[in-house]
Amino acid sequence: MHKKLTITLDENVYHELHSVIGRGKISQFIENLVKPYVLNKELEQEYIEMAKDKEAEREAYEWIEGCIGNIDEER
Image (cartoon, rainbow, N blue to C red; front, side):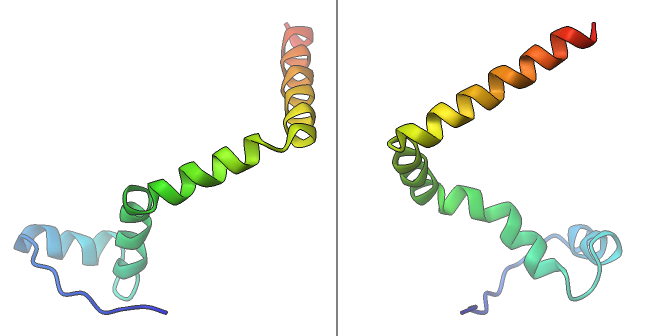
């Protein structure tokens, strides 16, 4: 569900948003910029939960180590 929010911007910023981002896309642009700052606690908790999955952590570690090995082989 989305909620409407009214904000006040400098006139130059307002015009540049319209010219660079485009009409009808500004809300999504601003939401994408703000989301990491306001949902950070949820994201942190999700990372904590993911780290508890030992099998997934082992697979990720093996994948990372495999990639590093490939990079060294390319030199």
